Length: 239
Image (cartoon, rainbow, N blue to C red):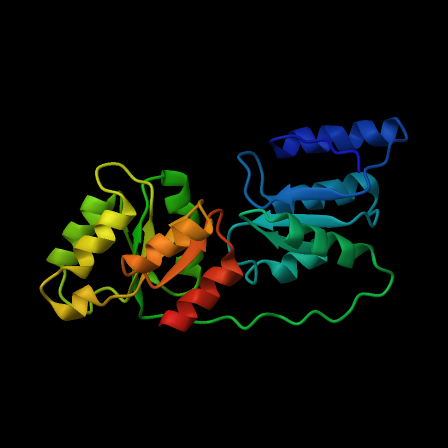
């Protein structure tokens, strides 16, 4: 494919108009759900008006659950949705399905409801905090955020046993890394606090990193960027 990009809706509209004028038809549109100047749904509507409802596949990228906008989006002309963080395999699968002449029935994954569960998210990067919080909140969790391992230890010490159901622990953080924070939580005097499920969340997915996480008492290991189905599967298993 020959890709072009723009970082706002108006830029996309101008590109579509230029393509029509130059007989250089855009075959596929991949559109973020939320942009500064207009929503992805509004952009799809504007594109359909310009192109006369040409049936080019149009995909919406979103870090949030799309069930609340799916009906409106389909009517507007959205072909399919693809979750963020962006995974090549998943995007390829969505693309292939849209270009097949006969689309197989899609089995929707079972959505687990974690309502009433509280997670302590230990993460120093603000963007990762926002993404993870959106994913977890959409799944029903109440989310508290600690910006480093030291803050996580303080939260676990201050709150009563049972306040948190699980901890998602980043590994590389300032002040105190996730490994040391896990060691200290496991050493807490209250055995119920010390036994809380702790999941390592890190960009390092090598066997050595997984082994270290297991040795210090972590219950599982998730990679970044977030694989949402894998995250949900892990949380369901541990809770």
